[in-house]
Length: 136
Image (cartoon, rainbow, N blue to C red):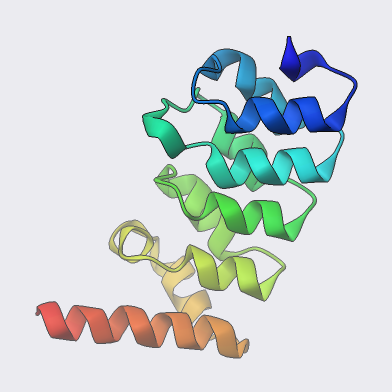
């Protein structure tokens, strides 16, 4: 079984396999090698896969900012997106800024984002608001 292999390359190959079982792949969210967790986070929703319950939450709490940022690509539960919007890393906070977040965020989350000193967060909000004006 590739997911259980001691060779990192095999586990990376499992992530990229369209035939891999989603429940088995879910173990990779806790892989000891950050590169494997990142590949899994980047591809977890690809190939029309169902994402097992709790996997995105695990990845959203990862110690690596690039892994947490990769999670923002997916349709994550509102509470997880709010947590990412309050992340220590400005790039993660910026990536968490989406229509989905803004529509469901608690007022405190919105206020925190509006007051965020990081230029990338302010830029993400500007893009979001510009898109809302175009549609509205």
